[in-house]
Image (cartoon, rainbow, N blue to C red; front, side, top):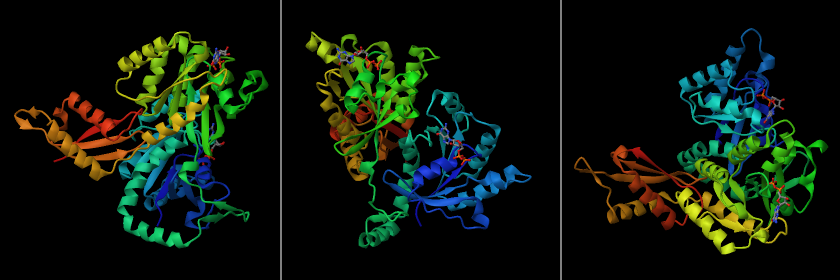
Length: 466
Ligand code: GDP
Ligand code: GDP
């Protein structure tokens, strides 16, 4: 009885493509049992450390006769009944169509655990579709590209809360399964008879975006990191779609470098460079887990840099500041002081953002970048056990009680970490609306200090609970 996920949506949004990606071609266990389930495929999916069963409802279109809608509904209904959660997909390039809306209404009525995935987001053609998708009333859309495999961490984030809850609810059964698994081999035999080790999450690529204003040295940095001249082929030579994301490895860890400079080169033939770079970085941030904001050290933190930094933080991504062209800086102390002052005033909500000074051109200092990224990634994934949090909350409220509200003491009753990436905490209070922002900031800063979660955004939300 694994956690079961159904992929639904109108034809052509990319359901099968996602299915294949989750299941992995080699390991696909495709069940084509004829009969009622003829039009759907099932397989064992995996993303990061999540294992689940996937049901793909694609392929329905071939069976359509008179009523497309009725048929889709029937098939989808069967899949939904079986599933613990539903991934509802739209094609963000095509925008939200009436059929998508119809589907969304119907899913909402059924009150199932649904998340909205916006597919085909690898280029700027998807931007409008993503905004339209907010209007479907199914929560924030998770953008990604099934075909290019970009933004799979968003799909992971979409699945994880329901997955975690399911694991909690089924803890006993899972424990038994785990015991059983221990006596079984950890090697998977593929269809070809090849033996491979089971993949673990630490081996799935870390998505790192390199963003920044034009000319700060992004391409130079990427070339330096890759140690090749791969990115230097111009648009005339026909840069491949792969230049959006470059696979790379450091200390045995897979990295997917998302290269916005490459995106710009690809499209700058017919669009304005400046406007494009802003949109590119926005897109890259959405896809990334870690965002490296590259600065020209001689032109520290301009308005446009701050916009990117703010977007990164607002999107809950982890930010690294790369001060490039350090070889070219005369007054290093002054430059660092200026940077630190600007960060203090412009991004006070995140403390401990790592700053790496380096020269992409000479390579000096570039070896410090990835260790910083790995540390930051750990913070971003930090999880504090509920017991520990509640003991902490008790101490904090004792030391500094929340204020009175119309003569009554505000009570913070319970606290839990709702998710990681970024660390997100929920506190239940008797009158959440009355708690001053300053008190929330006090808690949020103390969480950061006491649990040593540095350099990444932390979210603290209040909910009503007596
Ligand atoms: P389904 O009918 O929902 O299962 O859709 P498919 O998986 O068959 O995909 C429909 C079409 O969309 C195919 O031509 C895919 O190659 C294409 N497609 C799927 N994912 C993406 C994507 O991320 N980006 C783009 N541009 N095309 C995609
Ligand atoms: P991009 O537009 O951000 O991709 O920037 P490029 O990588 O094309 O670099 C812009 C210019 O800055 C080029 O002339 C580079 O040679 C120069 N540059 C890049 N990195 C460095 C560096 O570390 N030191 C110095 N002095 N110049 C650099």
